Image (spheres, rainbow, N blue to C red):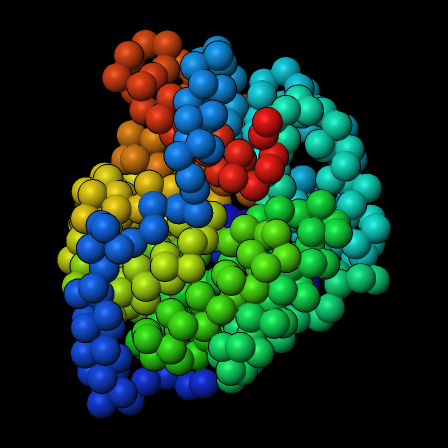
Length: 395
């Protein structure tokens, strides 16, 4: 999803030094061993219980199709924008999630005022998922009084996991006080190429800087610390952006990963991190040649439905990286949400305000014309509402 950096430039990502060859081979061995234990019985579907799911089913059954579609869209509110600019989308078009993005410098009080206004537009019994990118280092949307300046993920990787969990709980409590309930972090990618050439992750120190197993353990500590303060997390960018050079935020011709496989260390780190019950999995916009050469991960049923849901058993919310990123610029905006849901995903994270209405219109039109697609919309809405019940946002 959109990512803001503490730099003059702002990137669009809704998202110690590189390995020696021997270290990389050891990481593969460790993660493969780790992945072998990840069967469907042992992998969390999400931090859910049956009652939340049952409540979600009843709630979605009572919704119109337009209301169900609204649950599948995350609209952006940029720093400096008046929350009322989203009132129509939330109150009348039922958008169920908001991305608080940009370089907010108004502190926890300023962000809390904006999130409270946004929540006032939503039904009292179906409040908004309120998300931001608060990774640390160069990627920290929310700053000012009440928000710590978070160290980069590489620096977090130098902490013990106990210390990181304690620190993440503090950062999470600051988000909670500002009305944020989901942190679109951590990045679980493992950098396998020269760090400086790895534009989306390594060059910005967005990874923990460890091997795959170490990254997984630190990701779990971050997720658990956020959960300790009542804030959800989203692991990203599945199945990893640590082996590419192009940045999907800026590379219009697409980004190709030629090395990541379904049985390798890199994806194994994500699958291990699922044990900590993140609220969401965010799909990358890159294409993975060895997994599905015909579709970016965000639109790959091979990766989402067959592997992540089928083989791994994750039944929670799957969100996109920013639908308005350059990597998807060759696709009509009205088709973006449709392709995500067709592949098995749930929540279209949108970094550009201009894309929100076309994504909603595309989803509504497809659902009206295609009964099987409408059923997929319903299932996705149930997953989103299950998360809301788990988080106390729905009742």
